[in-house]
Figure 1 (cartoon, helix red, strand yellow):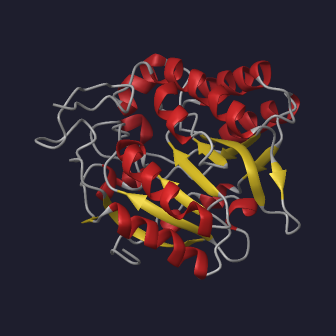
Figure 2 (figure 1 turned 60 degrees about the horizontal axis):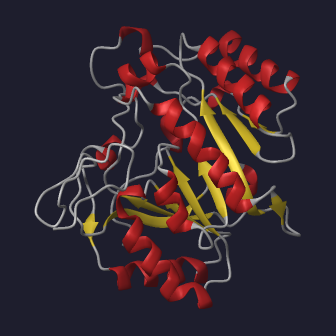
Length: 293
C-alpha cells in the first residue's frame, strides 16, 4: 500500500483509500484554470499567467484568501491527460507561463502531465507554493519547473504554529528555498521583460508581525547574494478572510508596518517588488467557478 509522504507533514495516508492532511485523495482536483493578472509584473505581464489552482493545501493558514479550495476542497476531479491538455489550452491563449498554484499534494500527477506535453509547451512552467516543501518533492520537479514562486511566511515557530498549524515552517522553508534557487539559478528575463527562469520569494506582511518580517529579510540577505533571487514584499493582507479567533489579525497592515519592512529589505540590498498598501483588497482573489477545467 503506497502512503503519502509528499509534504513535510508526512502523514502516511494511503490516499487511494482516504484523504491526507491536505484534504485530498490521489485524484487530481482543480478549481480554476485561466489567465491570471494578479501576480508580480514580470510573471503576469500583459497576457497573464496561466494559473491552475489545485484543491487542497498542506498548511492551515487562518487568513487564506483561497479558503474555498485550500480547506473547503472545492474543485473538479480530472485525469492527468486532461491536466496536460489544460497546459496546452492555456498556452494557446497566449499566457506567459503555466502557473501551478499549490500543487504539492499532486506532484506525481503533475510531473507526469508536464513530462507528457513538455515537447509542445514552449513557455515556462512556474511552481507557485507556500514554501512548505520537502527536498525530495522538489527534486521530482527538477528539470520540469523553470520558475519557483514560493512564499516565505514566518521566521517565528510560534506564529507559524498559531496561524498555519506548522511550527516547523521556517526550518522547512529555509531548506526548500535554497533548493529552488539551486535548480533555477539566477533570474533570467526574456525580451519582453518577463521572467523566464529563476526564483521569486514572496513575503506577506502581517499585522503586528513586522519584527518577524524583518527577521526573514535578514535571513534572505545573509543566505543569498542580491542577484541570486528576487523578493516580493506584499501589503495585500486582508482581514476579511480570517477564520477563527485571532483578534490581532482583524485589521489591515499599517503603512508604518509595511514601510518599515520594505525599508529594511532595501537596506539589505534585496531586489524585487513592493505593493501599494491599497492592494489590501479581495481583488487578488480569483473566482473559483471551474473556469477552464
